[in-house]
Length: 228
Length: 243
Image (cartoon, rainbow over all chains, first blue to last red; front, side):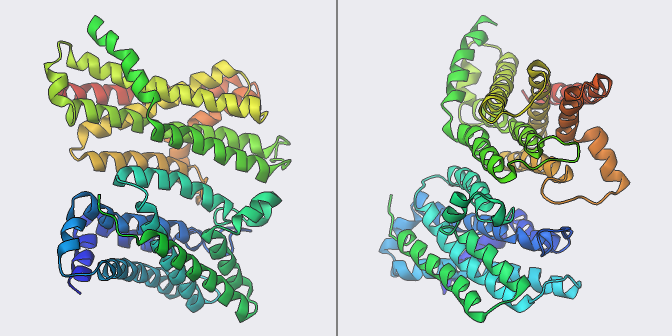
């Protein structure tokens, strides 16, 4: 687990990154609640977008390895590509797990109305997995960290809007509602609705199942070995 | 002087080929505004106007706040890192060249704003009122954002940090204006929004002019102008030390 260890270290070594990683969930706890919508406080409603950005920022390390030729050195080192990727992704996931824990149980501690905190945590965790896989796929299209981040930003603002995270999905025209089903954020928004209004367990399983399915899809595309 | 003037067309060509800036500051707002056009539809605000008009105007102004990133990128590349040595040996005045890049950046940002006004006005039938007044306010906002970015790049050593801080400036204005979530009514925040937040100053100047309350519109324009004067003085002092 050497790679895991060092990825973790690199991710939080820098003071600014440490601040960004752990200050934001704390701030998000204290954001106000909306009047009619969203039903969860704003910090929780928007946390999905935050998870997407953090996973891209974290997986920037892999892109950096590829650009600086470390990936080449690793390919002749006695470590398999699978092991390298798995340890990287595991480290990112661990950081996101910590953030989700801080957010959800911090909210419980300060008496925020979260309906079903445990299921909310599970939902955020599956979404984190999907979004890390998505980030892995995303960086495989680029050779420059900044450019990947900028294009990601423009894309996220659109899919967050269409996916029903920023505004309720019922407001969108029907065509866009149908398009939205293909976006992971749609399933996140649906999961949040389930947590608030309750419903059959089957539905929640479907939401998480879809997110995990997305994870596998993105992983398959993103895990191709790249040596530039 | 003439030599610097001769670089201007090339600076403009470079900017117009910077596809990522175009994507972020032109294509994304067009997509977002179009989605809001469908979402808000015929919804009315409390004055009986279409709610979409306010949103489209605010979105257009919001993206002017991020126009300063153009100036940051070019000043950084040409004067502080990649091309610094080459520019230094070029037979032209460095401060004048810095000025010309900054002016080109501001002009480009204003031009993108004009395209957005054109798109919302002609394509989506948003009522903007007097277009010249609107363009004047957008120009003030773009100049102010660029000056703020210049202050950041001159006062912060780390370029990454300067870029992030300019994002903080833009996003901070948006958050304080209450576009993401309603902001509580603390006196401090009300004061900032009334006197300091450039986004709301510009939005108010435009909306008061639309309802023909020019005395109010002039007040907000005047506050923006004061902001520009103050930031310009700071840029002048800092810039003389750095360049």
